[in-house]
Image (tube, rainbow, N blue to C red; front, side):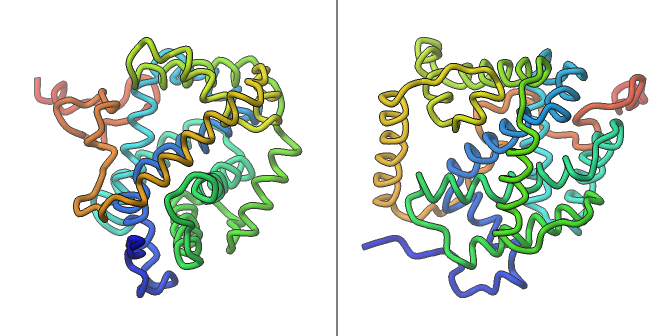
Length: 289
């Protein structure tokens, strides 16, 4: 008997935050984590984005912390909501980091689109069930709200519009850049540290096997081959069939509880997370001494 769809009776126009949060925490936690990580990875192939990230050296010199900060700050908003004190604190940090640099609205809209489109396509291919129309609409409404809180303008209002924006932007802008390649390499190396070291070579091939040809070309990566693609995708589809047989999750699966998150063993201090203009912030421990 198939597992029931959680929150099937909720209205995505009203309850979009709860629906989307439960998709990420209860129904597809592993899939959304992988897909959102891959969504960010795609953005490095846009030279204006990859070059900027390479110039900051944050992703190449401190990839673990950048991974942790991104995942944890976004999760703070997801868990607590846009209007909560915790959500607002996380949004201030996210917006503060972006305002340090001259990032175009077009690039910001594109990144937002990847957060909507890549998880939907990932779950179409590898999910234990397809997303419902309500699931997809809730995702759209959630990222429209996130876009408003980040000051992004001209945000699409439907999944199809988000998908067209992402595909068109990539077709026009994907290209090789040394900075973007360095950021991509550093990210892939970080991923290999999440698993036993002997698996690292296989993980590098597995990762490339999930990349489409335009993305591989933009980074200058070699094509992994038909066999590697078939085995990688087959393994993910086998996992989906096994997950479908498991009972519904009773407790949320949170990023903060994952062993791969390593930067904050003593707990989160959201106002001190992320990157700052040199000389800021004054950490609480420093201010007290």
